[in-house]
Length: 84
Image (tube, rainbow, N blue to C red; front, side, top):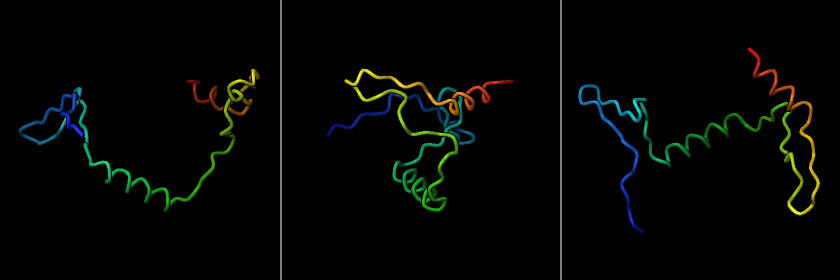
C-alpha cells in the first residue's frame, strides 16, 4: 500500500494554530474518532423515521421499463422548503 500526501491545501495560522482550507476554518479528525462519535450518537438517539419521507426509489429497478411519479408528500415538502 502506497501512502500519498493530501492534495488539499491546508494552511496553519502560526499565531492561532487554526487550520484552514479555502479560507474556511476546518477541523481535521481521525476517521475512527468521527465514526465512533457518529455511531454513539445514533445509538443514543435511536431510530427516528422522518414523517412523509419514503425510502422507496422514484424509479423501478433497471430492466423493468416502468417509472413511478414521486409522491405528492415529497413534492409538498420540497416546495415548502424552497419558498421565501
